[in-house]
Length: 157
Image 1 (spheres, rainbow, N blue to C red):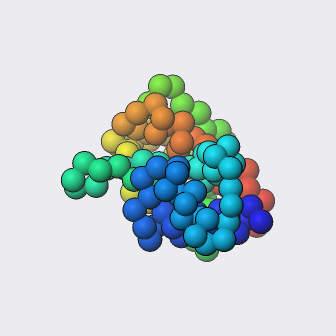
Image 2 (cartoon, helix red, strand yellow; image 1 turned 90 degrees about the vertical axis):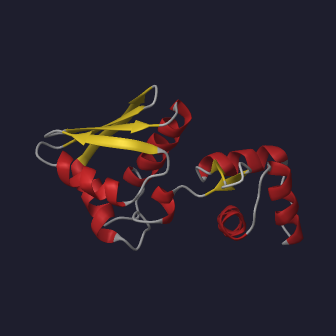
């Protein structure tokens, strides 16, 4: 049930303008899924949905590029690199720190740069560490959550 709900939420957010939790709840209800506000709030956090502004300044929920693009489950090359190279992900305020095995940081950084991570200002890679500057602390927290969910998933062989 939760997986179906998550899939429906992602579909709705990508196809419609969903600007509030209430509008998302109503859209889910139209599709036969009744959820409480607390459940919806948890789903939004688990899916790492973010609010973005359109060209007119209106905000809406969006799926971050990291989830939507280069790190899908079918992109095994990138997922395999992350699983084999990254040791730990953390953040301090709006800077994400990605610790890698020696010599792997630049390869991981190039892959992450290629995914066009939403609200990433820029990256710097050394030999075993990547610093990724995010626009806000919330963006950094979201990225750490997303990367950790990828790193600790059991889907990559």
